[in-house]
Length: 303
Image (cartoon, rainbow, N blue to C red):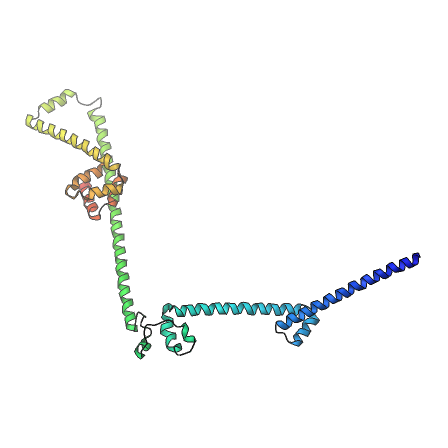
């Protein structure tokens, strides 16, 4: 009984193995048949199908790759044709109306890609190209080029003049700063003189100053006193102007000074009393002619 049981298990095992192998063979046959149909759909010849079946999937992959390359190439060609058709239809650069119109206007279907034109073209318009083209002859195009060259030269000249004017203004600003530096040095020397001579311990006695002023003719003394008072008031007013315009933006102060053409000396005094950077900014924002006149007034030789 034990022998029969062992043989029965072996038989079952052999049957399962045979069934498994048969199922595997059927699956392989189905895959081969599927591959064959796929190759036929790809357009392979019977010889190519037979070779692919003998050598496995190498030919199938090669055929699929070639099909993919062909498909991509076809798509690219279609896209470029579409772009070219659009450019011709839109008449970019006049290519469609001047070059292709005379050649393709009588070709059925193809002439539909040509740009639309107003009316029927005559022989004269065909010889000259599209009526929308800006230049009918080469001479007209050359003449237009010369006009553009003249305009370009004029623009260059204007830019050159502006550069020269800017350089001149920069030079004037530099002169103004130098003048400010000289004036500051003079004020320092004056203050040093007052400290070391007028108000120092070795200065003359106050009675000597009194005797000196009393020796002056009364009329002259009164005139000198009035001048001193007026100068003092003018200095106070000037200080107020300097403070007011220094607190403004350069463009705002420049706009006001541009309107004071009848009193440029006062403007020059205000600018001279301001800091160099502030006065330079205001001069740079002013009218060029007015700024030049003010700089001339503020020259050290004119002070």
